[in-house]
Image (tube, rainbow over all chains, first blue to last red; front, side):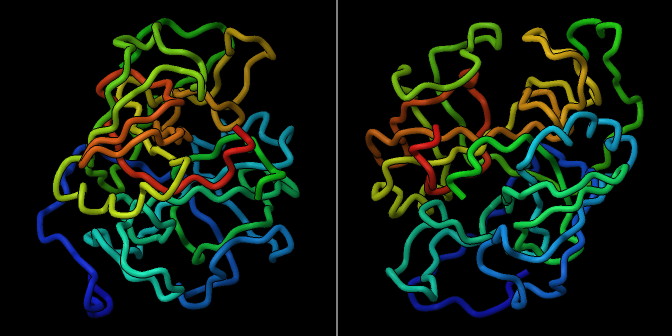
Length: 150
Length: 150
């Protein structure tokens, strides 16, 4: 899904990525941002309230999350292209490999966002700290480990 | 792939997880541990040297990783069962949802290990801090962000 032409030193692969494992979405997030361009580069604990919706039967796996102030949300960045090897980021520093960058563009576009948990309402979590487009699929939730490092 | 009977308060789902997205493995790790039982619960920066092997063409995406002291390795825990909703962990605390635990047992068994990068040798990274079974598939690498929190 190429969305813009490559810059001079950028490299894409035309080799197909393997189909080695399957992910099941367990829900999605609802945020104020409807396009990638509108999203902040990084989530902020002072950012807007967002909602995480966990689909059954996985809502049963939320039992106990209310004991944590911070959660890690594992998201699938479904809009990101997956074929780039080397990127020349607009924020400078010169071209480098996607594994030397935290860009959403990567072979398996998984993002981990640490969020502050404000409330749980059944299968819905109210959080701050997200940076994702509304509708982004959710693939996992883990208790947060290092809030001081955000 | 149930490997042991459920304890009294544990809950599994018999609802099939969706097949919503596909992961491609980009390499694997080589560690001293050949079974899950032999693995440490958590990686240690004083642990043994391990090797990360990145398969082509994704080795080209390593350009620049040598500038980072710490990397996040995204691993696919291929041996973990994926149908549990509530677990009664052996370390105590009573039964709770898998999203309130950092157990490897989860619908999409992705683990992020922060490791110290000792050396890069072409498509091989020598690291410390892993806790995974040898042969565990690699799905992503990102620069590490918070080494002080490990």
